[in-house]
Image (cartoon, rainbow, N blue to C red):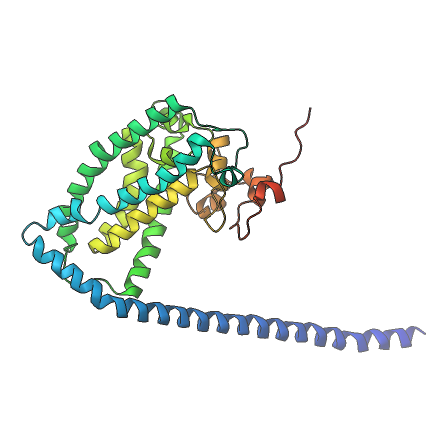
Length: 334
């Protein structure tokens, strides 16, 4: 009997090894096929986008050259005001926040209020507190952002002319965006954590945290030092390092202002990036310091957040049912 059992175990071992090897081959085939499909899809997507970029590029190149002729000898005016680094980003910021402020102050339309992250907060927003915040944001933009952008022009010219004739290619623009995002994540995370140090928090960063339930416009509601160190510099260093064209800077500044508005808006709206991460930071103060969450994961500054329902809701909402309804918070203990 023992000999028969030994033979059975001996026969089963090659079968198990064959099964494991077969599983590994199937896994490798699935992963390899998936990777090939992903690469093919990415190449197809970028090819079509590049084709569109190229087709429309002649039009934009012609418009850009016309602008250069108009502002010949006064390119810094073009850079600072007429089209570029202040006008379009600021227009994007206030257009988006103007729409959000209608909801914040009136609670209408009702269907947007359903997506509020912190239920019962800012419903409606305190008008006195809002006026104070808007005034601070306008002063930051006028007295700090504008002079810094004026200084950005000669700084960029030391490396490469931001108003040069050739517009960037599509693939170069994608590379720039990736590098801008990486630099911003690193600089914002560490500057933000530094501002939470007791030496700086009370005198500088506490102003921003007056809003434990944030709204979009307070994304730039900050002490002047914080506005420079944590809002302006992380977004500006990337274009300086890359010697970027005005067109890239214009799009990047507009994107950063829209993304930070979404992060602070207080609504988890369909088809927009999730603001749960930064909203939780305003609620608890000592979690979720970054933009993407990569450095928070590496430094363990999101461990508490990951144990909450807010973390489960920290996804792209692809439907119209509010995540606060599909993934509700647990009932509070009496």
